[in-house]
Length: 273
Image: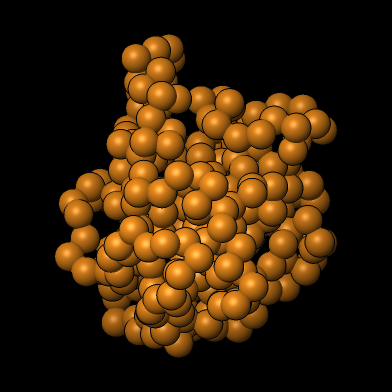
């Protein structure tokens, strides 16, 4: 366990889709690390969640956005790491906090991996003592709550037959004053499920965030930014077989049917790693 933990040192950036909000992250970083230069910083990109999803496109897009910011990506899968390996990476000497991205994908599977070898506790301790800046993307944001209960049914449950409870890392309840970040608001693919949750919130006080939105947490300061970004890549609706590589990605999930995204994802995975 890391020493000198307190909520004043917490720095977290939550978003449904980092490829749509990377410019907001740049602004967040300026506030979180005064006089800090984002370009050239190291990023630990944890990609376990996407391994249980048929569509890899969104992880590819988010990594492209990180590269656009000039960041150096170290992609890892926690399922293949020991607690000591993770701690060693976090503890590498640096005058700036390490940026750690919990990539999107299957929420339940990501939670299961975080519970294995106490990886989740390691990340929680590190963010509380200011050693890391934690970026939670989609599923990566959901697992930071005290529970992922509202997210059940969003993903394939067969990916996590051994998950015995839905308790998350409990990093968000206090700074968000009990509000629960509900990612992918206004996203047509998840529309029916999101609407059902909003209509039947039960004990939850949902904070809906669209794919272009973000939540900043710096100590006790919280900012909710649902403005549409100024820049980015616009993807016209291409013929999938004629898809061309792009600088970085700025795309609404709703623009593409799931099978088309799968084809784009496969093409990108094969040719633009």
